[in-house]
Length: 321
Ligand code: ATP
Ligand code: SF4
Image (cartoon, rainbow, N blue to C red; front, side, top):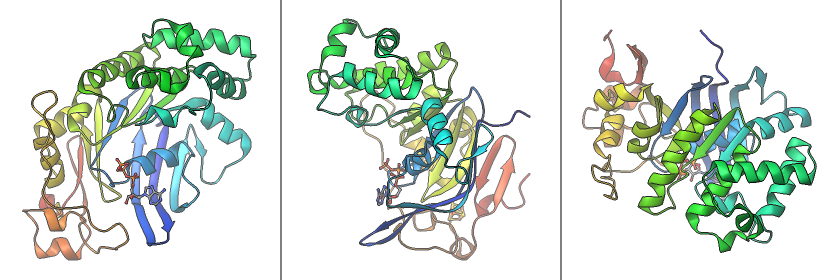
């Protein structure tokens, strides 16, 4: 079997805040294979962005990695934080964020920001950056490329700015593209266009794609494989097709049921709430929302069970093969 481009093991990340310690990741395992499109699905607060930021080495200052390992391209990123490794990660991992304004400062034109980022990352001259930027902006199907380059972020529509942020990420020719809820802030029509674009660019640029979303419908459209997260833990993973047709974990079943059937329809929420991220739990984190729960589920952590290409963490499947 091929070595994964990213391999995360038993990753525990806390945030230190005035209201206590937030346990964002409680022991996550994840492999991202070269060339695949992998989705991480889960509702808000399940730890998806924290996992992505840990891989891209951009965790905020109040985050602390307490345990575990993140191997990227054979390098342990938690043990080796040298400037060379940081530069490699910055060059090879492209990020697209939910809010494209995260990629661009409001104070400078798009051109200035392409030049600032890419001269540093690619070590090329400003003239070369401009030619790379023009190509990247064309590749995200933006017309009037020079007008876009001369604009300030607020002069572009949300969809145009998200395309420009995708171009900025792609201009580095990254090996891995991480897209963190890239369509959540856009209107329905633009969402569909951006998703189609990401899917096409994945093939054109021969990328490995790690897509983060709370919407299983997006995973169904874009990803070969899906990992479902809940309360800082992975609860199920497998091929997206199998998870859609035969979800095993009760939480995955809820997410699949919540997929909007008509474009623009609102998600049907799963009743109940995530556990308090400051609390510890002995058993299954989904206990309070699960209609299949037994007393064992409160006391004992769910076992890891492999069923075909699916991996599920749930007491329901003990003894199944
Ligand atoms: P969302 O889609 O809302 O971003 P998520 O699944 O990506 O949710 P995270 O953003 O990783 O989840 O958040 C995991 C937990 O960590 C949540 O309880 C969140 O409130 C908390 N958290 C995230 N960032 C910080 C931070 N900078 N400081 C304190 N707590 C944080
Ligand atoms: Fe439900 Fe128990 Fe499975 Fe958790 S371990 S999802 S509570 S049946």
